[in-house]
Length: 398
Image 1 (tube, one colour):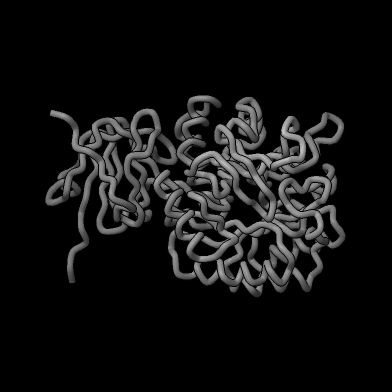
Image 2: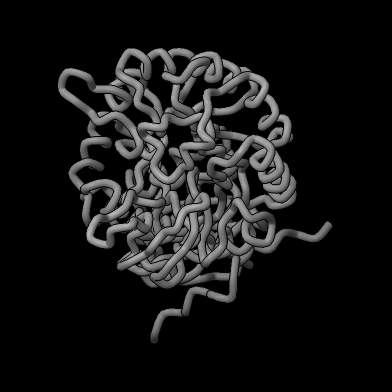
């Protein structure tokens, strides 16, 4: 039997789930991490291994995005080719695993899209499943979702979508205040699907009831929901008391840095950085389409096109990538490095139940790694012990 290829990264700022090792080292055998430590590499890992010296660069766990719709001009609702193109674009920014998010459509159309995306996901290990954002959403908090296609979560429609997903649907966003909302939460949970509260006008008691029924995630916290109020803390307050995970789109548009700090204070260890990226991520400013609506991207911000150019339209997803979300978490929000990186890796891995393989740099984990310069720009990405594209860490200057 052929011995697995052995590699050791040295002289890196290694971010683990608990600490930053600087200088640190990480040893690989094939697609797995077999050792992690600080300073000198033990001979058992160094001897016979290929040494990649990182000269003080960051070595991070691969990012996991729970909520992403596309990139590089591609939208995941369009099928396999677009999904592959969008994932590849995000991979260059450090996202090694993700969910594929689909937006509201008619039930027949959504069934078709779910079936196609599920078939793709079954054959691509980079995909951890599907996220359905709609159609069981509040018209009052719809964002970029066609109000004509929104509906209450009737059991038959919900079951159709999950059957079409063939076990690949991992997260479903819904508004629990709709007729049948709590029943839908329970049905999702009993089917092995994470129910997420989002695009919802739920007050505190209703949101808390949803979390008590098994919902365990808040979709893009503060966006697309009833605001936090001192007499009605609504979804955010209920999520704080229920101890669930909250998504944060940390692009400086969806959330002020102080708001991200607030999330961190009320939900320590339970904030998951997400992109909610649409087709314009990794692409030029200009005109795009999202969920059938015209979207204009200017200076990286995506908004619906309105009849009056002087009136800005609703925010329409983002052009964010996970590396930027992490950099902003450290530099603009002020989170400790370990916490910021965990929000983009370990927190989502734990939510999805894949933390034994993904989400951290630790012995036994799959070698999903990101090499970034000291300013957090991604220089190379490794997935399952193999380089994801043509980039490689440059040897240090002598």
